Length: 434
Image (cartoon, rainbow, N blue to C red; front, side, top):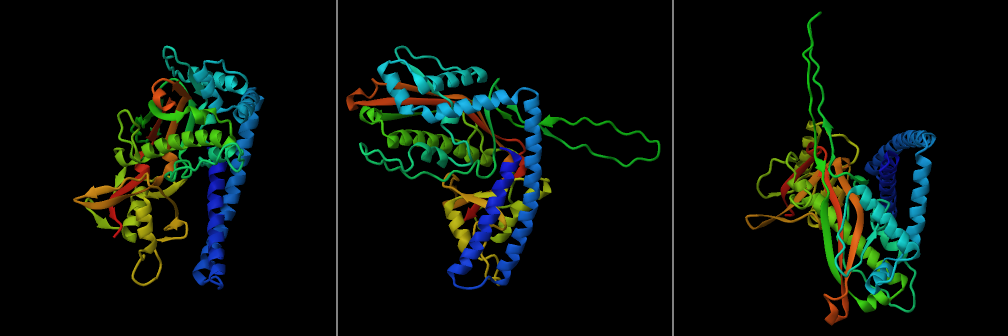
């Protein structure tokens, strides 16, 4: 993500906060109170600072782009991306699946999408063997996942409000809220060549010396996690009748569900991945700061702030600091008082003690001797890296579900989640919603 884009996200969040304050007063048919006026003044100052930082970031990025174009590389990249975008708009995933089942060659945009995906796999060093008697199709990962900060783009791009009369609108199931890019995680796509180290440089220690005394030489290791391609797969049965439909709704449903499933896998792994074959999530990463609680304890404002202190003690940066919690803990904090006298609650509006937060059911509920406990995560999410290798592979098997006139579709891809600096995160895994 460009730095200017991250700053624009912060600016949009501040504008939304200002709007909420004004709307809240208007809803209650009153003027802004002293606290609200003070908060709006703070927001104005923050916006002025953000405007300057955004302007500087955009200027730097523009100059960097110009330098790349002068070097002769960027113009070619821009052309390739523009061509990919045109193919993405034209190709149909359901048509590719039908071609695979019927054994007919891919043509047009579907053939171009396959060629782009195969090249991505070659660049990434990823290979999928062809099963005897079956045709494996490939789709570029960028055609599946959103190119912006939420996965809603994929859902609306081909389904949206465009309803074809020949098919009824299909209703989506309930999906957990997704958060990784919203909180500023660093996305690395188009990776190749196997493992990708994420080096973290240790600082050099200065010493005070007498006149003429020798400096003690130092060696500092570059340490850090390594992104390593891990296979993620899913299988789903789809009826032949559904695949025969050519409506925009069906096409949108297939893409949207694929995108949501992939996003759920990445987000879930980032929070609570167990390691091994799966990525290692924040809750299971060694070196992440842990709160003092070791048994179930009621959430208080002091326990919320404790995590901030743990991060600041380790000199974590302040690029994308935010909280991550479960919906049940969020509901509890919205009704818990900060203290006994102010009448303020721990969560007010869209912030938790002045910081952004996201609640999602992907944060797991723990158990401490029969008492449900809800982890609270705080940290700099720009230190969370997501790597993606190659394209998405689809294998349609028309025989495994033949009695139900359905097709089993197997999907495979490669990705990983790692924290570059675990000390940029702090966790309290023992909070209750009492």
